[in-house]
Length: 107
Length: 120
Image (cartoon, rainbow over all chains, first blue to last red; front, side, top):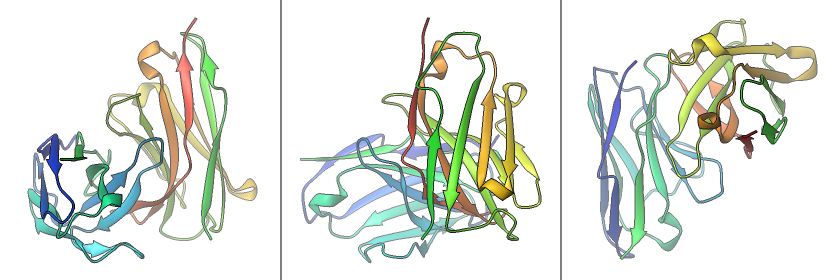
């Protein structure tokens, strides 16, 4: 299985801050990297697929980049509704493994 | 509009077999490129991908759980069924089904999830 490692595991930030979350794959996955947002008690929501493509309806303050083994999710200006846990997932091969999650909390 | 909903028991005993049904609408599982997958999440923990079935009946499984999982589809009923044998308390989790797009795609629509507790 391909292992996905996210960092940090958690972070505290203020509204308006720029936030960056990284995800590293244990082997090259080309651009087959997806990002999800999950709020407490809710199902995950797809934000970005194929490393940098936006899912319909996702605000433009979210962006993704990377290829190979290293990827980044950036929130350009954190909004109150962005406080959540974010997961990366590789879809290069099955099983489609997830990272351990990054919890974004209010500072 | 694509929707999915999980159903099944909320409580199972250790060693029992869990059967979960995902009933969906807004798409057909006979359409090329489409799949339905299952993902679970133990309380307070990360997401764990379990299984996926494609429109052509290709089936993929988590390697660590492969011996315990079976995924099937009933295209006429718009349902996907996941069975997991020999349930253990560590299998207590919220189980989600999700619409999947493409072989190297993503889970773009998710059900609300169903919490399954394993306890005697």
